[in-house]
Image 1 (cartoon, rainbow, N blue to C red):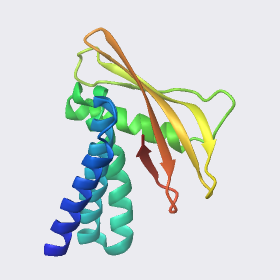
Image 2 (image 1 turned 60 degrees about the vertical axis):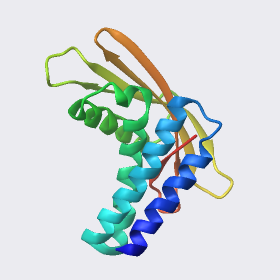
Image 3 (image 1 turned 30 degrees about the vertical axis):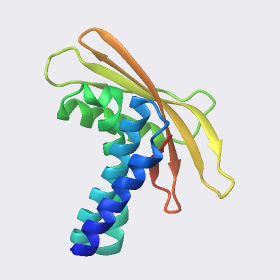
Image 4 (image 1 turned 180 degrees about the vertical axis):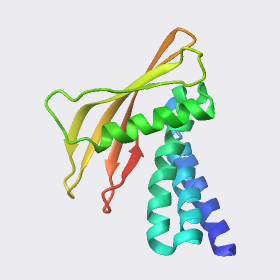
Length: 162
């Protein structure tokens, strides 16, 4: 347990220093993603060992990045979950010349809705790829748009990048 706490603290400091020159939106996304990876990895390892840690880290990273972003801060937990799922579905789709957006709608009758759409794909030199996802949300009638970059790790999981 002590080892996990020191890892968490060291990683949080690393994320904080690494984001020193970023915008507030990028900083929020990176810090949320970094802490999500750590928290998800620790919880996953406790519940399912090594494979649980990898799955937990990937899901925690995506969720944390979205929650820390400008759009994520303005959504409640249920709408944020729907938006994260749309992003996961957009990333899971095979790359296409004109990818289709993945839409989501709040179940709370507030008019909040959004979509996620892959707008760019880049191959990484070490294999795998990075994708830029345009995440759009309509919150209280106002359109919010952000482009978020996600790259595959060695296990094929998507991780938020700046």
